[in-house]
Image (tube, rainbow, N blue to C red):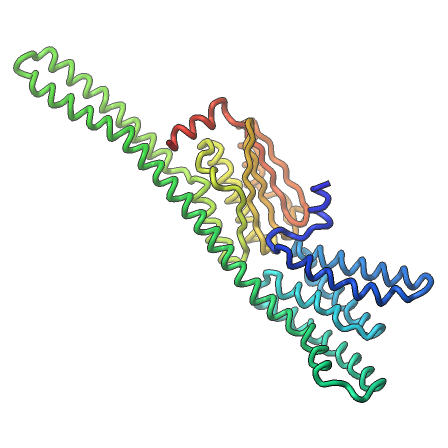
Length: 378
């Protein structure tokens, strides 16, 4: 049921409650059709339902977004001509203003909106003046400004909200990078620091025993050599680990790339991803990198979302955008290769199109893997 509501009824979470508030203004429109008798009543009710559905779906994916705007504008104009009701344009006004569009596309839709609105206003004002020549100037201003201004106001408000959200997400990813840095520093201190202190102590003992007891001094020197080789292997392992990108690093870089392409990155539940097993992080990082590349090149999306979850046995990652989906771009060679890597770890991957491209990963936890990660971070 929850999945159905998200897919067909509810608005995207990042918009908050604003769209639901605007939908309340559909009630006066329903009152226009309540007095109509016969089949026409069902026809106009169906038009209103279609309008609300198109309006809601416009927030879910950029696919056919311009076409949906045109459909709404046509219905807006029809209600203005038939019922002298201009305020249906408020819905389209809010939609164009609140949807994250690049400036060139926004200006194009804005001009289209004002052309439809202007023609409809001329019709409504003409009818008002014809039926009642004494029209109050304030009523006239309200009639014009009510549908005309929300597009600009919502555009400004939405941009500020997206900037705030981007800043908060970036701060969170910087926090994850700092945690990763602290983890590495702790590992260097706990492992190499103590080992070097022990080596220095053994060297001092060997130096004192060199003349008094050469055999014991030789034993100390051999132990120093063994410890040094072990430390060298540890350094090589740390350097090897540093060559691989952590999820915190990948998310930070993904945000930079997506921002340049005017795509908003939304990340959920990423607080503990730094503790995920290294092999899992590497595979998930590769999937995110490939998905980001595809989103920038092919998707026409303006929202890119990554959701992290885990349970007792598995790690779960959902990556989605609100673009044209896999139907048009198919699954790239890179993603196909990554699917094999996920399979090699005992996990599975699904690629679907649901208001955009959706990638779902499930990767099993190793026995004691989470405990190991917790110990490493402590």
